[in-house]
Image (cartoon, rainbow, N blue to C red):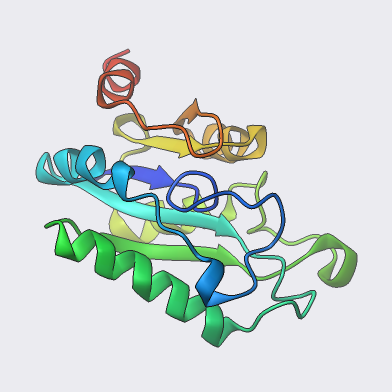
Length: 164
C-alpha cells in the first residue's frame, strides 16, 4: 500500500484570497511549501491535492481556467523535483448543485484517491487551513493537520502526527 500527503489547495499551496480565485493571474503559489513537500515526496509519499472549487458551479471561472492553475502548480513542483500525483476537485456548490459526496467536509475525494492509488489511510495525513479539511480527512480515516492560511508547513509536525 502507498502513503500520501493530502493537501488542501487555497491557503496551503497557494495564497488564500478569502474568496474564489477566479483569474489565473491571481493564482499565487506559495513556493516556500515546496521544499517540505519535496522532502516527503522523496520519502515515497504521494502528494495529492483535495480542493473544493464551488466557483465553477457559481460560474465565477471555468474548468479550463482551473486546469491552467493546476498545471501551474504541478509545474512549480516539477521544477523543484517533486510531483503532484493527482488533483481532485469538487466543482459543486451547495446553493447550485445541492449536496454531493465530494465536497469537503465530506470525504468523497479522499476516499476516491485512497481507492485509486491503493493508499493506507493510517500512514497518511491531510493538511488544510479549514476545519472542513480535517473533518474530511477524519471521515476517510486519515489524520488531519490544521494550519493557518498561508502558514509554513512543518515537516517535524507532519512526522510527529504520522508517528502517533
